[in-house]
Length: 614
Image (cartoon, rainbow, N blue to C red):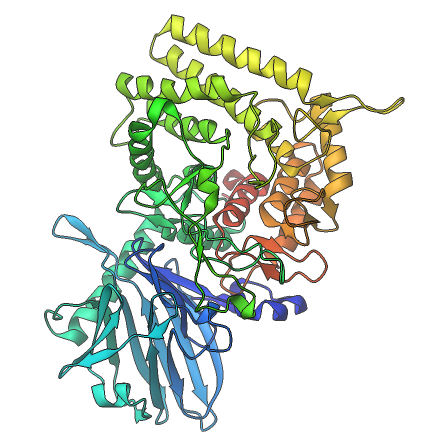
C-alpha cells in the first residue's frame, strides 16, 4: 500500500512558494537522501549525515545538473509521489505525453539479519515500466570536495565506480553501463535495478537481492510504526514525523542531528546559514521526549548511550552545546567556496562555531532524558548508581553555572546574559537529580539537590521577574539583565517550573503573545540580534504557542492554529526550521527535528482520546 503525499496533506495556495523545499527524505539511520518532486536526489552525504555531500544540487546554484541523480522520462509531462505506507520508501511516478509511465522506488536498505542491523552506506532504486513504451535517461553526477568537481568514474562490465574524494561509490545495475555513462535514452522493458553503495562487488543476483532488500526494509519500518502509541487524531501526520525523526539518528553512536542539511538560510539573503548536521543536546532532548511519548524507546536507548560517552569524556562535568555524531567536540566552521548555496544564497558552511559557546541549558538537557533510565523498566539497560554518580558531576556544573552569563538557546554570537531558559534548565537538572536520589534511597543527596533546586528557583523568581509599570502586572524576562521577551519562556510549564494557571506565567504568556505573535506564527524574539531584526517565524515557537493556548484553556484556538500549521507542511508532511510569517514560505534547514517534535507534541495534547472512539 502507498500513502499519497498529496492526499495526506491539504495543499494551500501559498505552498507553491515552497518548491525548492518540496523534498522527501529516505534513509536508514546511516545515510539519507532528499528527493525532489521529480524523483531526483538533490542532497545526500556519505559515509554519514555530516560527511561529503555527493548529492549537492540543492546548494549548487545554477549548476543544478551537477550533484544529482535523476531519471528523465522522454517526453515527460508530470510527476507524482507517494510514500509506501508507514515507511520512508518513496514511490515516484513519471508520465510522458504519449502516455508512457514509469515508477521509481527509492529506499536505503535497513533490516535485521545475522544478528545485526544491516544499514549500509547505500541507496537503492528500482525503475518499473507501468504503461506504454517508456524511454529514460539516467543522469548520475555525484560530486567530490563539497561541489568542487564532478566525481571521475571508472567502469566495469556491470558497474560504474565514482571516485568521490576520499570515498568511492560503486553503482551496480542491470541497466546498460554504456547508456548510463553516455547519458543515452533507452527503453525500459522490465524492472531495472540500481544499487549505489560501497566499492565492493555486489554479492548475489542483483534483481533478487534488491527486491529482497526492499521487502525487508518495508517490513522493518511497518513493524516499527506498529509499535508506536499514536494519538487518535492526526495519526498519519504523527507517523510521518516520527519516521523522519528516527532517520535523523545516527544509529552507530545514538547521536541525533538537528536536520539533514546545511546552510539553507533562515531568511532570504540573511547569511543566517548554519550547518545543522550535528547533535545539539537541546534538540536531541526534545526529539527523544517526543518519541518517548509515542513509545519509541529504541531511539532513547541509543541516545542514552551517546550521552554516557559524552559525560564520560566531559572534564569536570563541563558540557558543550553540540557535538559531531561521533562525539567529536571540535566542529570548526568553514565555508565551501564551490557551492553557491540554496537559490544562490551562500555561504555554504561546514561545521558550526556554536560548539565553542557556553550554553548552560545543556546541563538540564543531559540530565532530563537520562533520568528516565532510572525509572523505566522497559529499557534493556536501566541506569544504576554509577550512572547517578556521573550524572551528579553534570548537576554540579548546572549548580555552578545557573546564574552565569551564556549565549542562550538562541546562540547569540556577540553578547552574553544570564538567560532565564538556561537558569530554568539548570533548576530542572537539580530538581530531577533530587527525584533520582529519592528513588535510589540516597536521602542526603536528595536533600542537597532539593535545596539547590529551591535556591535556583528563588533566584529566578527574584531576578527574572520584572514588575510592570504602575497599574500593569509584570512578566518574566528572557534574561536576568533585561526585560525583553523571548518564546522560550513558554517552556516554563513544560519543564514543571510553574503551573499553567500561575499568575506569573499567565502574565508572561500575555506579554509573549502580544510582542511575538504574528498572526498564525510566532517569533523567537523581536529584538535585534547579531544579524539584525528577525525576518521569519520560528516554527517550534509556534508549536509552543499552540501548547500554551491549550494549557490555559483556549483549546479551540489551539486546534485551529495547529491545523493551520499542518497545512504549511511540505507535501511530504514535513517542516523546515523557519517560515515567512507573511507568505508562509518555508526557510531554514530541512527537515528540522524541532518542528517535527512540535507536530507530535501538539497532536498528542489536542487529540481526542482513544476511549472516545472505541
